[in-house]
Length: 112
Length: 113
Image (cartoon, rainbow over all chains, first blue to last red):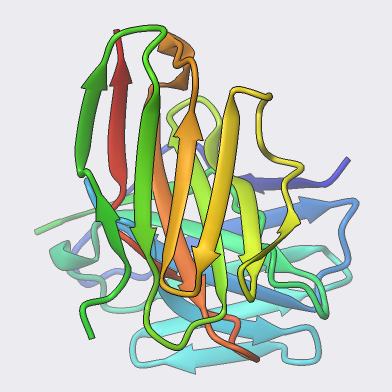
């Protein structure tokens, strides 16, 4: 069965450092992969989408990579700030379908 | 735009009662999704509609759950009868034609006693 794995343990880093979150998937060949941010008590908010033919995508301090051989996506936040503290969810997606399957998310805590 | 609107924001009910959750998608969006989120299982897709038609309801847990979308601007998720294990946060999301990004509502926190 399809499986999406994100580190269930919280990631604690210091302000200014780069945070790297991992999303691994099995029994899946997604054409796209999306990353969302979720704050407590709120719905997820879309951050970035990367296609299978893109190795890397950047948006401001965010960078996402997509390795279809390793079946893995990495999500980086450079120069992290306490305001980046949230849970980050990855969601692979197949071509032609709008259905998203979300990973369980990784909680990021950035200390001042 | 007000974004996706959900009501109520919080619902506390007793086991056996009927619960109806409501969602208004973003105007112009043609796909609507209902999700359930718990600590144990994360964010799970229950059902989604395209142009008001249910496309995939394979995530609906059992017959106690039903969803409708009578028009492009309104959807309901009903649980009858409710059980304590239905306690969760229920999210509604919408997306437009050709878009991949989903816009989520604020969620309804359901507690079944």
